[in-house]
Length: 73
Image 1: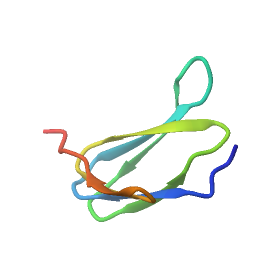
Image 2 (image 1 turned 45 degrees about the vertical axis):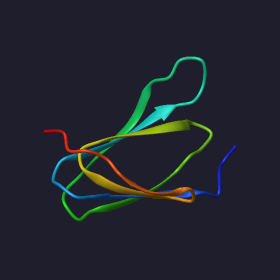
Image 3 (image 1 turned 90 degrees about the horizontal axis):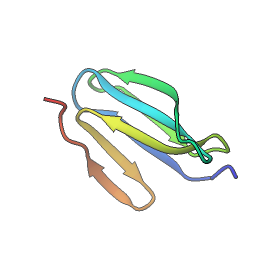
């Protein structure tokens, strides 16, 4: 079930949280990363990851377009 598509997350402010959520009947957090301003994370959906939650101001690029999340403040 691995996807060849990646998403790129770039933190616009310090303390952006990127949280991986599990696949299956019970969705749970399984991984968390904290990014500081300017840091970039490249993520991919896998057999275990069905969703990614982003908290904080970040730029997100996908095959479907680019968007920006709002600040936590």
